[in-house]
Amino acid sequence: MVNPDNLVFKIIEHQSDDYKKAVELRSEILRKPLGLAYSQEELEAENKQIHCAAFEGDRIIACLILVPKDETIMKLRQVCTATDFQGKGIGERLSLFAEEIARNKGFKKMFCHARKTAVPFYQKMNYKVISDEFLEVGIPHFQMEKTF
Ligand SMILES: CC(C)(COP(=O)(O)OP(=O)(O)OC[C@H]1O[C@@H](n2cnc3c(N)ncnc32)[C@H](O)[C@@H]1OP(=O)(O)O)[C@@H](O)C(=O)NCCC(=O)NCCS
Image 1: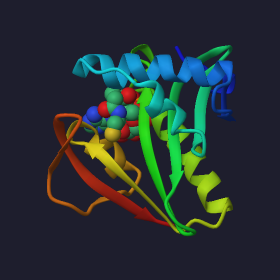
Image 2: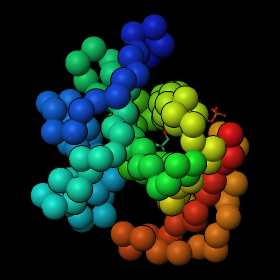
Image 3: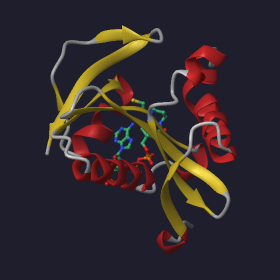
């Protein structure tokens, strides 16, 4: 059982211990199933990005990244929830936490490259599909966006 009162949503610092935990979770959920791994260069390039995580105690159970594209448009990427916490509303709560951060910084639009399997998850949060299907990391994706 997840007690919603025990969950904490936070921004974490690039290269911090929490960031390393988030990379482990991303690796487990997003990369290993595709036979892929992060390179040092890829992770170093994330230093200007905004890293958000959901914690239960010391454990990161979901995380995502925000990438400012210009003054009004924010990209949402690398959204994932630990397998044993999926389907409990945590991905949605973390995404809404991230949206709040973007909105408070004056951004007007969020977009993401959604895996085809995750499209219904974003649709629940009112993201709309705005592209044809395309391949990224070898699997089908759609661009989706939401205007605040
Ligand atoms: C996709 C993912 C981030 C969703 O996170 P989550 O914490 O499991 O999602 P939530 O429990 O917050 O789901 C919110 C709503 O979306 C729905 N939903 C979530 N994933 C879904 C899916 N793959 N298909 C259909 N509906 C889905 C949930 O049923 C829930 O709906 P409800 O409110 O009617 O019950 C998570 O399942 C995950 O990490 N998947 C593997 C990695 C991945 O695909 N990441 C997305 C990359 S674009």
